[in-house]
Image 1 (cartoon, rainbow, N blue to C red):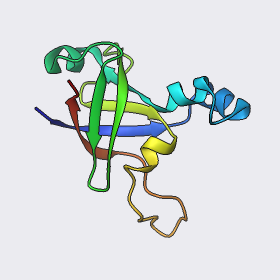
Image 2: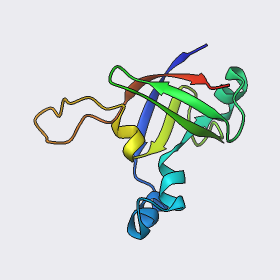
Image 3: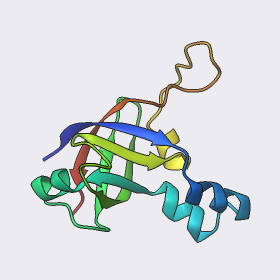
Image 4: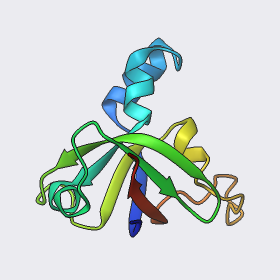
Length: 114
């Protein structure tokens, strides 16, 4: 069963280092295809560390792996993932005249992939 959550894409050190090496190498791919989920949300939704989840926004859908974060690091209902090709699929074309797609506070449906 899908649950609506808020996705906040951002930059990370691992993603940055991976980007310097190559977008095609493992470090960058792992960083941009792993969503961080509050551990309490994971337990409630039956998600397992390293398990696959589907995220659907109004503009697209992606499947990525998930990893748990403690409640003090990531509040319930909030997801975090490093910017990359997958997150671009979730963003719309609206840039609010900035030239950069709106990427913060994306409403997504999260569900476990069996």
